[in-house]
Length: 549
Image 1: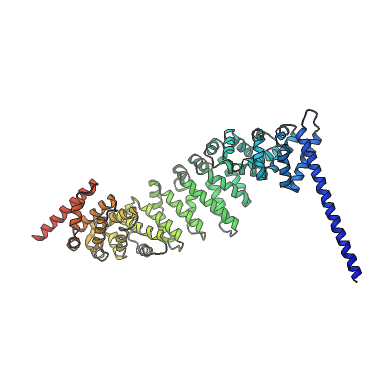
Image 2 (image 1 turned 90 degrees about the vertical axis):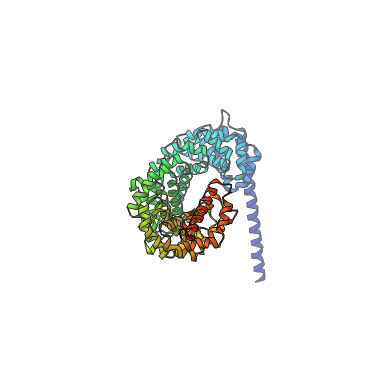
């Protein structure tokens, strides 16, 4: 048994040694073949060049790259063969295509980009983009894309050489050649960040072509590339409008409809990218109006569905869409007439803070300058109850802030006694008092103006809430604080003037020595503040005289 085992073991050793020798021999033969091919490429290419031999050498380089990319790349660099490729790229059609293919493979290696650039190959490759040979276009596109990737200076040179025009032409001429379209899309994706590239693209038919490609794309990778290019282009206002005019909104709406029921991670990525694209398009005034289309646009018509979707991303997109459509006063009126505010109120039941935040901000925008809508919403007990709950929220500062701002907005734009009473009944007044002392100046001023309006409309029904919330004392602190800005001080004094109409509140002001602070403010560096302080003093003194009589 032991002899048999020893014989088997010796046989295995001999077999391994044989395999090793065979591998060494193959490697040596491969190296010899590679060196021979490199030598031929370096010194060949004259008038009597044998095309078959040249193709054989180029194929040999391709095979060597496939077997050992790094070793082959190192030898290519050391052999100084790359400058000869300028000659082969412009030789016979077959050799030119093969040379472009080899270069595209060489450029996969990060370390070979600089040698390719130093060999002056990019200026030779660029004119080849005008070829009508689709295989040549494929390899040249790959080679240029890989050599110039993440090289801002070279990319600017490509744009200056009108490569953008060539890339768009190729996609328009061969829209059904998927590999070629993909290469050109990737090239555009790399170049489109440049302002010069966006400007060049705005002079082409890229918008309509990308819409066409997005509609026919049925693979998530291609969808992702197209959306990435579109998102970059949508940073430019001219291209935004061109995309909208080309009907990108219809293609994106179709895409979202396809993706909304999927739970696949790649589909969720595409859904987010498509949603982000819609928001980008809505940020431009002209493109936003194109998407609104007098209330008939597919994006506007889809908003209700998105807001009611199970996807938070679609809910957010719907809220942002309404907010952007509402930037235009005519749109806003139409939206209110169509009951948008009621739909938003229903959707405020969402428990997703980001959605609540956006919807509250949207409602506030819709109320701006719309007295009837503000009066209607400002008397809705369910809405007011929810707003007051959110005003107490400690977990989500954004939601809390927007709820406070909406309360102030309802008072400011309705200027209605019924709304004042409704907010008082909902116990919302104390939150407006707190808002007046917020660290955010905008919120402070909104609260101060809203409280002044409420005081002027019906001080009697809210003065008890003012006293409980220590409004007079809080306003006094604002006036005493040196860091309080002039606009806040001006509005604070304006509110005080209204409060002085109540004997109880005026008495609180006297006890808190507000008069002394007002006297100091009469010398304030800001003229408006000084005048407002003087007027408040006069009101306080006149009322004091009346009460003494």
